[in-house]
Image (cartoon, rainbow, N blue to C red; front, side, top):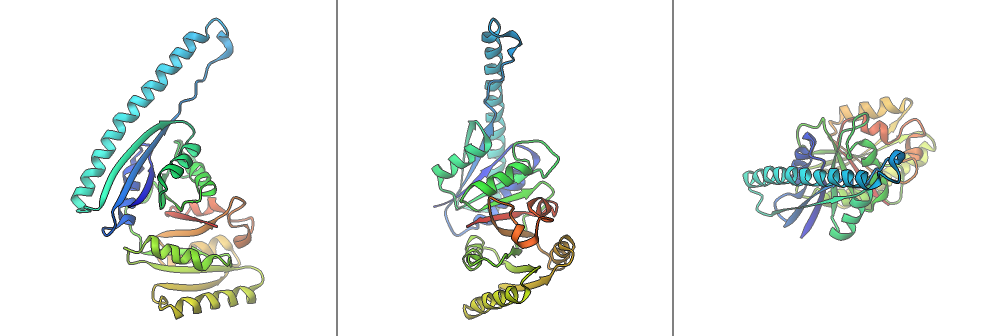
Length: 288
């Protein structure tokens, strides 16, 4: 049985994220959709009343945390009910909805859940930059950097769950072949097209040779109708990215995540993950 881990914060984006996970799951494999919510459980005791007031302060904080958990449980019941209705209406008889609620640090708890559940992919929402919530853009970046599981972050602005035109950003890595094949497997039940693009900055002749060799490999495997290759001269890197996304009707961005500046070798310091979040497209981080 496959497992898709879906961290949720009960924002409007949570249900959109769940619908996206259903699309990824398809209908041919038994799949568990596991919803995970993390609430803060750290006691914040002011030192103004220490030590005489510490007991009452701690009690008030424990009450507050307990109320957070109770509210989380009620919200989870509602979300699970909504998701089960969607699953029933979509006639996905292969899907099982499970859930868990825990207190703690979101980054650590998501990583712990990965160790326990062994998911094939994490599907999480993101409010993007400038908004609050444990699934804000910064948290999505952290999860992308510090898990070994593929992570897809779905912005709140996404109104549909189309997965048809995926852009894979190549940085000339020897792992590109394996990651493109992984994309094909992850979305094997969707009629996807993968546009493999390398934005040329330096060593242009070498980069073009790499892309030609990679294209020849997929052509020999008979996948050239599904995987297409582009080498783009990038004078203005941000403009080149935006233009490519629009012209190719890209609906999902995929890349190899690195703990260091993600696209330093690909785009230089002027373009990194934050620029991809600005595109307001689902972003899929694969790992080395």
